[in-house]
Image 1 (cartoon, rainbow, N blue to C red):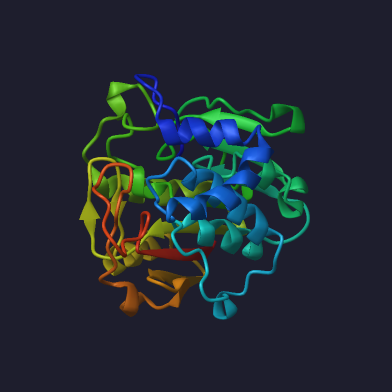
Image 2: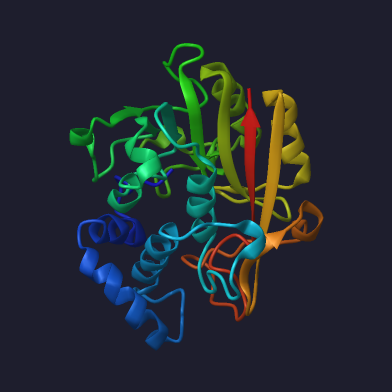
Length: 290
């Protein structure tokens, strides 16, 4: 769930929101970021990432045929957005964005989203709001929503549940009550997703994957925690797709076993490390059908 802190705005999140209104700088990012030596600490990293995501969303996404290198130097969003929009069905339907990952102008313009009745739910109001496009915004805890049973045809939760039960005051909210330390409560959100999803509906879920690691503001999921989600949701069928980052090839299709030891590197708070990914070393992309 992306959010500017009330106690002091996060520089990268503010830059993302500003870039969403200034497309020319996204284009410039594609040209200038390479001149920095592809340093993820560069202020041109985010414009470059946006430019690459926009470019790749205009192309077919086939996990087994990703060009090499794909998304080199970039974090897992370069996989998550194209994967989600490649899997989401065409046509109308009630869609919940659980975590507000899709709340960017260029993403909301995607043909598969323009046809959906879209509700965005996250912790607190964001700087960008597209209500004039008939998008509904709801603020609250994903572990206990106010939606009725069997409400949505689709739920998309992109890199969100790894923050549930942890310190969400770092980037997402100024409410000190959101500074938690109970990482197992992500399963309450999975239970809630099942309740509000229509029979036959699908949950599209992504999480950072690899060596299990609980940090103050997120946790990295491992196979055991994926299995707990499957058991909790009780899908009639489900799929798991794994991608791993490597140097110099970038992102590629992988397997749960091959991703089991993947690291996590937070370029905003950790010293630069040669050959380290910008964030997750691997990502799990899951589909649960009720």
